[in-house]
Image (tube, rainbow, N blue to C red):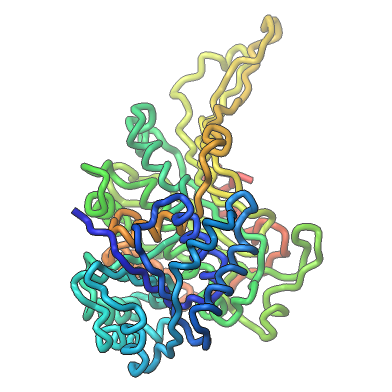
Length: 483
């Protein structure tokens, strides 16, 4: 039986993530009566604030980032009463004793949300140990980045493991908190319709796209060190691929689901020929959302070979998926903001309509994660008519719009679920160490291949769908990106 924590500690409590996501998410849980009674939330950061100043900071964040219908004076006031603050330089162990005193008695359990630079993980864990904040009733949630390759990831995880064993370590990938991502499991394993054909016999190809219209947006220093492959593919996209490709777990719990995901990640075929199986790009000048925008190097202020776009043709080498290509695509300054998975099924083995002029298209399943949330199955139907000139077939959508079907259910921020699961100790939607390492092993091999082949990103205009070579990546197989 999991025991909810009685206290929550937020590192980076005055940062952008806290303002936009964490504080609004915690308020939402509080307003709906989902936080444990008496739970206190202690924020810490370098900023020199006291409790009252942090509460005013939180009030301003809620005012800016909450919708008007969610704010009530009573709920905001009672939420702010949960908040406390202790300044801390996490690089020095001296301040952790004062942090422990501020938090007080943790015999009822403590959950820690740690969002910090990778180089601070060591000092922070040591500080938590020195302050008596790593006991058996303490669990820790880790926000990325957790290293920049397999070796550094192992170093970070080894540091964390010195104080927090795996069962008390919760690695966060906020995509796994999205309602539509969780609906992948419901779609696959709560319906008898798909599972019999969810394999190489029934599916021709899979596309996963995460496209952004924004550029660097204040992340220049971080982004130029990592690029699109490590920023998006290593975590979000490979987690989506694993959910699509995994075998049915025996039960809905953290162990069973993550066991099946890691099997998929270990089955990814190493990318040998990077020049024919991957495409990299970097955005140049162009137009985005009706405005003229600068290219990456102009935004960055210096020359760079960092990729802002990557497309990959991947394979999962197991019985279920043998020979099925998984096309992955992500980039910045693309034509539109979109996250989606497109499953293209194999055509029927024989068309009875061909002699009457009927043209068939393969069925397609589109799972849209953002900005809209829907599941759309494209099927063939006959157009109305007497068919004297032949049978006319058309592709029509069967739509499940989550926004429409659950219009009276509030759509939650992904961090609401993840923070509540961290507080309650449910690991199902968090990433296990062996998953992370399997992801990095595959990604590192691609980067080594790029270095060995001297691959440089191809230029593409802002506001387009990336380099032309990404089109060729799919069309040589007779597949078109879903645009």
